[in-house]
Image 1 (cartoon, rainbow, N blue to C red):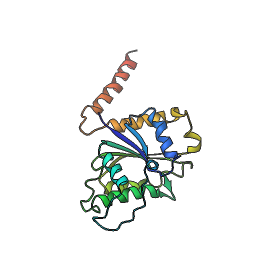
Image 2: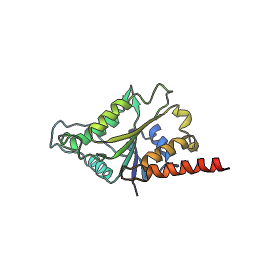
Image 3: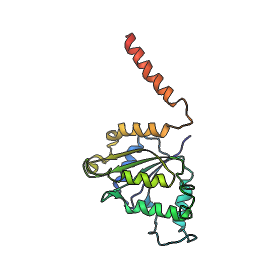
Image 4: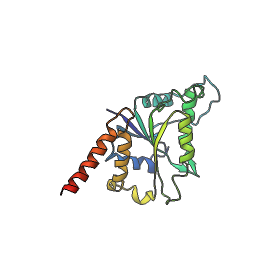
Length: 203
């Protein structure tokens, strides 16, 4: 069975992005929902190869290798990914010998990654970091297969509001289920669609 880590990369304990993932999890196939606020990760304070990676960072990275796919809820700040997200990625680069292997050896190398953002802003916000974030994740070996911004978060990311995210959860589940090795994925979808039409025409 495919294992999926849904990780909010906010350092805020009451993160909008973490709470958004919890609402999605009611209808998604996440193995674990986690948040960077659960880890006391220091700001990157090294500048060379061979420097020590803090145990808390190493433990988190090692645990991430156990997952097959990733859903990252990444806050947007001033049109960019949050500093906590960049800090995590910077520690990954330090831990992987300063990316000398060109995108190899990361927890999400050659794995599917979904990037989400939950934001209190309207349609103008939230997604502005996606282009840059996708490029950085791609440079680190990730295969970003879907991005989506959820706006008006103060109103929508509310207790017991799982139904608001039901359609999005179905989309995300579809991306999670997809695998290049699953040759029946599209055939099953086609057969279901075609059977529906056959029933409609014959009734």
